[in-house]
Amino acid sequence: MITSITDIIPAALKMEDGGEATTAAVINTTSHVNGRGLWSSWQRNFTSPELALLDLFDNCVDATLHEKFQGNIQISQDNTGGISMQNNCRRCIPPVEKVLEVFSSCKGGDEIGENGVGIKQACAALSDLAIVVTKNERLISVGIINKALQTEDGVCLPSFEFRREVLHADLDRAFQTNEAFQVSIQHYGNGDIDEGRRLLEAHFDTLLNCEYNHVFFLVLHRVHQRSTGGGIPRLLRNLREILPRNYLHVPPKFKVMVDAEPVVFQFWEKRLAELHVFPSICIDPKHSFELAMDWHYPNNGHTVSMYVGFDPIRANVSNKNKAALLIYSRKSGRLVREIEDARGMLGLATGGTDFGQGLTVIIDDHVGCLPLTPTKQDIAFGNEIAGKIHETNLTSWIGAFTHVYYQHFLGKFGTKSSLGDEVKSHEQEVEHAFKRNTVVSDLQTLRHGNFSTGSGISFSRGISKGKIRCVNKKSNRWVSGKATLINFRKVAPSVPPKRAIKRKDPDSSTSPLVTPTKKVTRTKAFSRNMLTILDDDSASSSDEGPKQDDALLAEVSFLRVKCQQQDSQLEKMEAKIAAYKVHMQNLRQANESLQRLADL
Image 1 (cartoon, rainbow, N blue to C red):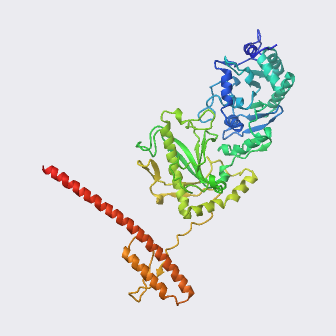
Image 2 (cartoon, rainbow, N blue to C red; image 1 turned 90 degrees about the horizontal axis):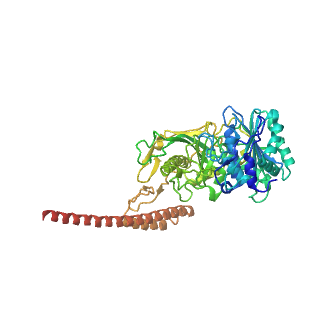
Image 3 (cartoon, helix red, strand yellow; image 1 turned 90 degrees about the vertical axis):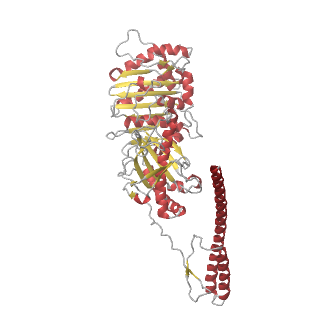
């Protein structure tokens, strides 16, 4: 009879006296951390249950992502009002003892989970009880993440091993000798320990009969509901919708099912118009580009890839069409940071519609050099000694390539309005591609696809402005790629020639050609004479017919406005000249005073 939680922990540490080889063993139990406090912290680390599910999905991707391996990930509803996740693995799964060890991880730097808290904190945020089951050949391992087992004296995450040949005998011993195991399985059966055991054995049978040698299975019991209605089906539907946008490099050959429906990951490949790639941008994490001699190609830098294009869907939303920045990291390409309007951060013009039209910038930190927060919801530059320099170098180079890309297409279409109209014209094309919800068989992921690109771009650093900019646009070469699905159709508009206007010269029988120009070439007196002449011309030509009158009046109005503008410019120039004369006079007087002092 268990009277309190303190009775469970010692029981979790016990092993059967004279234990045999077939005895289910407790491999990992407690650590010297306040268990209740840590659990409470885990519960508050995610802003939504969808983000916690993404954290668990990271583990599935890390275990399956390999170019010669076809991953199979299944996420579905569990019979106990929860969620189950199952995936095959390309190699032997680490012992559950290691998986559940707090603040420890077996993953490499290019994998998304390296802090050793991912699966634990995600499970705690979603449910009070989670059961981990792994299969390595003929060995079944079970780990329990149960809120009821945590105490102020430590974290209790017990794990057990069972051999296929004596599975039921090992399971009987686990129930007989370990009260923590009993309590957890009884909780899983909603108070009925026999029902909990039946459900657990059903999961064992599923894994043992599975065609894969290495399988990871996780069940979340009675998932907490923080969303507004819909229950588990609504939560899984939301997950299915956000998965493609949150991962760049899940191959099309992978089979990912959420609530029995397939997930297609070719999101940005089908979403962006004029999708271009700038591979291998070198970022110096320690030395400012403004001072370093090797600022362009730093010797100790790391590389990121940049993808940029125009989003026709966002271009039609007036308050969400500004330059968006999305940063993905690790080999799976997990979204870790998103900024809806990144113009200021990237050192771009922030006024009006500049760098709008659904402009979308994607950064791929595939090698995993950017430091991440434990929840993978942001970049932790603060953890680095030169974190601020690292961040500035990164955003400056992103801004440089974004600027040259945008100016290229703006130059082709002449005006921002024309560019925006062309982007918006592809909205139905994008919507049709997503409605099909099918894999484009010959389209690879962003990292391996043959997308359009720009090359031969020369940059210069402006130390006074703290920006990197292209210095010779004529040397830029823009190459189209077959993997870029949406290309702009319209040809760049030609600039209309300036309209020549004929007028009668009162002092000559000829009619010289007058072309309006922005350069100021008239004096005020000449401008006033011009207005007088134009008035006389309009009065004398009133008998030449209504069509000629309308044309002449239009010309008169045009030249009148130009003359008035030139008068205004002349006044400003005269004011500047007067100020300059005063300045020069002051300088001469100062020079004379210095000369007299020198003579003395």
